[in-house]
Image (cartoon, rainbow, N blue to C red; front, side, top):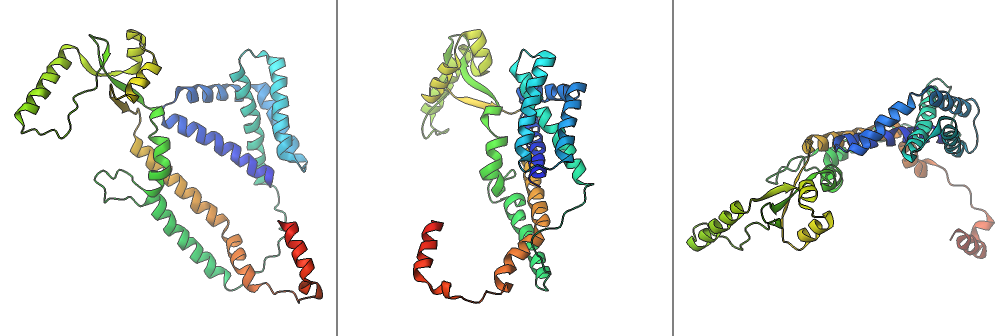
Length: 320
């Protein structure tokens, strides 16, 4: 059972790695997944991975998860020697492939193996069915409130669910995945902080003149938002210097994402909601049993040892 759960975690982790990387247009992830697909379809890797998965399925071990990891490490080292590897990223992709292939075999075979009887004695009570129904209704309401209910009270409410406010936006709208543009003057090779004036009043003639003069200077020096890579390559400014100028307020920035953030937020929220509902659906019998167990499990008759104060204190200290 633990091996099956671990296999699911491996597949889910790789899927999320691919999904986040693809959604954020990260080139490294695309390169790694492409290399993983090429390595995973190699006949030698397929054969060794299938042998490892078959061995774990054919015979159950007490520490099968550890054997899976150790087996993947051993096969990676063996492939390194047999096939010859000069780059460590290839070995990492091979190790991942040796985890994925046995995991797929374990998951597929789990659908055809007979289910073992649970050691927990479960007795269906009349109250269990209403509790299961109430649990599913409560979960559906909470899933709607947390994952799907958009807060439309704000002016720009684009997918402002509770989950996206505190979780999704830090992944999908992370500035590390965006193209950064910096205010810079191309002629003078100096940072541009833009026009700054507190309490700017458009009706004030003096303020308008100052702004117009500033715009003339900016146009003369070709000051505009420029991609930071252009500044680094063509103007010889390092990224550390740009970060320091931004921190000191001597220039301003703008971020552009190469994907629809609202769409990917919604996809993430709906996926998380579906996972939550499926998890509760699979565990509904267990939840009903856990809730009703304290109410319907008869208490054993008290014995003399239950009234032994010294023994009670001693057992309490041991538990601490």
